[in-house]
Image (cartoon, rainbow, N blue to C red; front, side, top):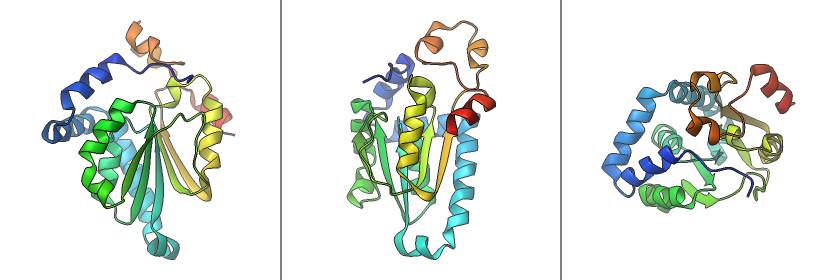
Length: 200
């Protein structure tokens, strides 16, 4: 697997909130409060959902979502709490994160609203079925990012929507030489021009 190790700090948080629903709920709230990207992602998801809510195809079949690199599952929790008639496939390479998510989301799993799978985004095993692909703070960790972008595009429906977030190319400067930040990334982030070119 060519995806490099994630930030050790995230692993420490994962241990703290492991199998504790109350602490995990607080952790999600903290993430939403302190990270601007969370506000942006949630706002964009609301807009996307509102655009599809009146669609007859959606009313009949619901919407299929792929969370590509779900991590702690905070955006899955937001979507399940906010939207009806959605089904989520949440994938990640970290089995411990997935195990914790399966415990936390067991009621939604039982209702078949979400499922968690271990998966390397360089080798996705899904059909072309998704109305939305969500990919938050993942691509900067992967050396072969263009391959992942193509793989994610291949599993989207023709009218599908791709929502991603990644640090900017200035993130390394903002980290002030923090080796833990630089070490966990295949690249600091993207400029608008670089990302546009890679998505073409």
